[in-house]
Image (cartoon, rainbow, N blue to C red; front, side, top):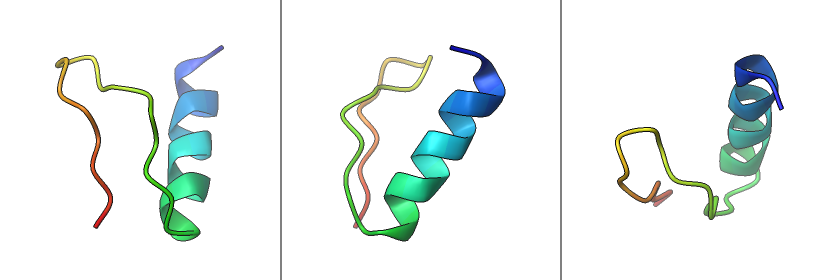
Length: 33
């Protein structure tokens, strides 16, 4: 999966108010509040 695809998926998940399970390259879980 390309970086652009990951960014797009995360943006879609954020837009619908979900919390992505995928972690950032930094290793911190992404929290959508």
